[in-house]
Length: 230
Length: 230
DNA sequence: GTCTATAGCGTGATAGAC
DNA sequence: GTCTATCACGCTATAGAC
Image (cartoon, rainbow over all chains, first blue to last red; front, side):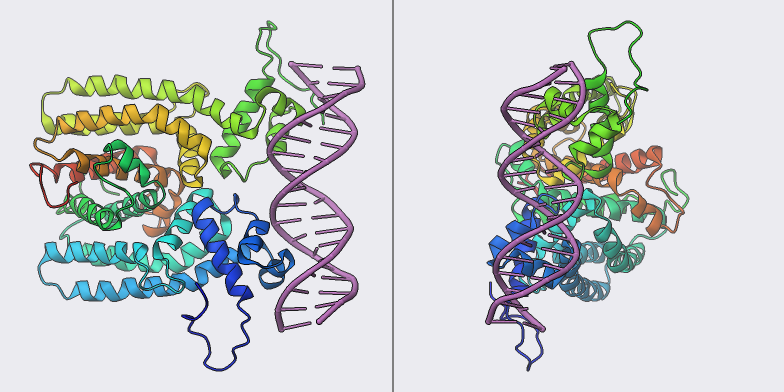
């Protein structure tokens, strides 16, 4: 939970950790309660910092958000593109499709590629913010994620001969919505299955997301001008 | 300030309209900005009521939410069950599956069954609240929607011979997440398709949701003890 | 450069005058 | 039923201590 795993400049220790402590606390709290529901005072308290320090380091509350995105977006997208390249080497179209989808979903759950060790935590923040309609988050997301999304749509198009590209976009959009919803409201699975299945089981969630999406995409095969397109 | 232009009922009926005006304003604003981002003062201003009147009629802000749910939940679920019964009369399994899914999705978009004329608006409120983790909303949702969800899972199971019930729950869960996400972040479709397709087109959104979900469910056929279940 | 203390104004909630 | 006054707490900005 300290700042040891930071890829800081080898010299210049200069970071007194206050800044990072605030950032970590903000991310943790916002992943749990969203943006508006968390106060700067809570963040200051949780990080052991003074309220004034928060505005000194970050200015407005919104900038805290921007920083959280900053430190997660690039590693996550790099990991996605890396997995996507690996998936591209698979010859069988069906296997490749599954691997492509998986390379999009996995980094959203996994913590391996993350700065402060929390892929799922960061994805929860994004999920909540996407619904809160936070303008700052909207801008950052559009700028940092849209090109990655395009790459995935392209890779998927390569696995589904003759599929309408717009329809693929819709299906990928549904995947993201399902992913977000599951990460935040996973307990609903437990309730509706009477405890037989759990939404907190990330392995299972990934598997379900991948196979459900693959099936919805396969359905588009050869529907270039099909009934549901455009 | 200037509350003279209030539209009174011609008859002086028991409803002083202030209460309903507040409720309407609250629903409209919360559908746009969520719960925490909307202040009681904004609601009071938009409805032409005094701030004190808001707390007089509803007490806490949370109760406003409860009332909004109150007046929409039952009509929407009634409409869903009505459409579900109609769908149940279809003999062909594939056609019935599409109709069943449609009967779940349509009332979430349509305004026909709604009190204040806004099925999509109410669904947006639910979507945002589901992510904000609002506790009051959670309780109401669990109480009012879970049984409807069970009915749909059952109806779907009747269309997919041998499918694992838990897997169906996962797929229906994904449908709800995709629906919510589309209703709030539909502009993403416009961006990623370069304007060729629009997320604001509800007819199209419904069609895409229904067919994508149907495909993901068909995929479960005969996988009662399949690889992705439990 | 970093942090603390404090003051401005907006917000939810309450008590009590009309 | 309606409205005003008031309170505690929220975000933000800034002055001044280390």
